[in-house]
Amino acid sequence: MNFDYLIKRFFSAVFVLFSILTFVFFLIHIVPGDPIEVMLGESARVADRYALRESLGLNLSITQQWLNYLNNFLHFDLGKSLYSNQLVIELLFKHIPDTFLLSLASLFVAILIAVPLGIFSAVYKGSILDKASILLATLGISIPNFVMGPLLILIFSLWLGWFPVSGNDEISSIILPALTLGSALAAILSRMIRSSMLETLQQDYIRSARARGITEFNIIVFHALRNAALPVVTVLGMQFGALLAGAVITETVFSWPGIGQLMIESIQKRDYPVVQGCVLLISFTYVLVNLITDFICILIDPRIHDKND
Image (tube, rainbow, N blue to C red; front, side, top):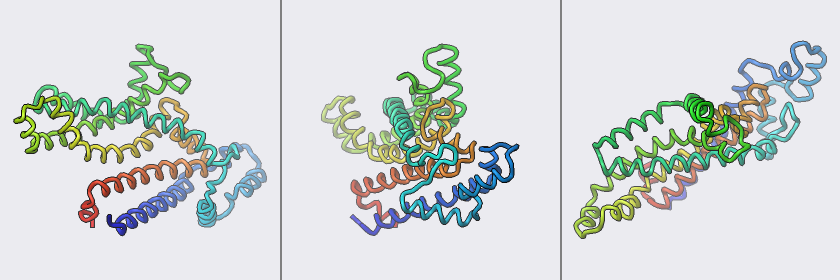
């Protein structure tokens, strides 16, 4: 294994996280809106505004606030919420389980839909089923979460009454959010599985297996699918990080009490430390998953780093 390549990827990930941290910090300070005004209201006295601004350190220059934030971050201190005065780390750990549960459920939904759809599309290439799967995949990728979510609520909650509209009070509450997130991923995976299976089914060892009289089911499941899984696993690992980013909108639509909803509420309140903590957590998870995926790919195929050099 080329450790130089691994070190290069690690420092690249660190640079990406630092860039995201800096960009988000300056962005949320530049956009219109004052957290002091949101907290105290427009009728608050000037002296009260100044005192609160000074106590929160918002009277300092933006550069000084950035340096202070970096110094605290290096000491694993993400600060406190401007509103609840609760540690940002505590707020994140409180909401992480719900987001992680939703991401796993969405991943399960995506695999449940994509694997059989992709296999049948490859086996029956050019058939009506194949064309229908292409249409479904196109729709799944094209329809954004903020459209798919309300549509599912309208059909399955308001019209049919099968599932709750929002919240996570019931076990069934996770079904519609998971479908919303998982449908887009299922569309990507099904196309990837189809493409990988088509390539694998053209290999010589598949023809040899058929010549030996092995049943088509065993050829597809134990020969073709196993060898077609590597690129699919790679895409799956990379898309898992994207689920966390997509959860921001989905959690807001379904009032799911995860990191996404916490971030949206904090943006509305101009709660800078919480927003920065949420974005940093999502970014860290995304980068970490992609980094682990790269490492796994190198372990499986050491030639990958040569292709990237």
